[in-house]
Length: 591
Image (cartoon, rainbow, N blue to C red; front, side):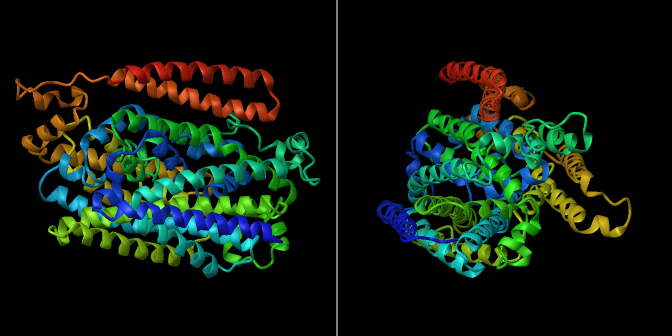
């Protein structure tokens, strides 16, 4: 791909602006650890919401969507579209609870909700497990996407790509803290969206594609257009539609779509001005993430089936790509090589933005665990704010180095997505219920964490090698079913067989967070003077369902308009508008 001087000017200016934002934000970020990781708990909903969207708009996301569409068609995206249900549950039920908790990280929650050595162990272990191990895996998939994109578009080697992206991202992340990340995300989001839509429009107009109508009627594309899988084909319906909607969204833990909220989503809710801003931020995120962003990626993925129907076609077009990195997800980058000067620079900068926004968030989030939930809690509780900020900056560099090393051995984004889903299988329901069921204790979470990890490793690396009832690829969803079932049975048994948390700990949590009292009545019955929170749980769950229908209707409407199905598009649009009106009225009534 030829990169002109104009393209390089756009890319360099993008880097300069990103670095300047980090430098400006550094003036306040170094004051103390809470400022560095939570921006003083004074952030508005619109900035936090856009930051959430920018973070999940990583360079590996369009690659993942392309991989899915080429393999399973548009309807294959239900493997992540189903997470909207979890997202809306977070919006209307959990956002205000997180903000009320006033913890610095979601791991600090453990010693608010549980007590004793079990709570301390959970906090320390998950600080390392999530903040380092899990976080590094996620950043490695993002780095892998960068390697593929810039390998195709710029001819850079893996290490050249990693060096350029890592240095700039680490610089502004370590200087500006969360405020620097939020402000840079805001700038980078609009750049990324402009690049995605601009690329989709140009690609459809290529002579080889011949416009939208020709694309949608092309033999390689026609069979990939269904938004909902064919109900007569159970081999696709079960793994692509039924499993995600019936099990996956509530039973699995996945970064950015944690049941009940968590991770960097919780970090942004905790940094909001108040509960209303926390709700508004997560609502904006879910609408934009699911209803607006997918279609430019889908259009480019469908277009790639015309120009590169087989992997061999890409291998022939890009002979310098490393053999281990060749996969369907590479098609997104391959299509971008057709862009003209100027637009190529914008798109390249937008992809750099996508990489950097995700990496910067994960670096700040991961280092917050290392500092707040490990170093200052267990290593040096009396550490000064200056020392904690310094440790945060050092850990930021260390996490990036580990992620870069891992990125060189991964092969594709869908592989990493499936592994992460399997590791979190069966733990999701705990994160939903622990706010509302007093009986859940620290050992509930410990047992679930251990069993889900062991089961994931077994099914991914051992089961089929034993030769005992091997699970074929088309029934890979059974791994998730077994993982969820075994993990859930284990943690429910452990919960009922172990002692509940001390009443003092439970009452302190209940008074501070004020969840609906339905699952706390047995405990509260021992304390007749304790006020029961009636809560608005039925209304909140109702809003969650209405909002989910609203966003799915908007998602379908966009697709139907693109497909030229006017009646279906008009109907879906009307449903989305009515849903939006009901959600807005309900949001105003929330306390």
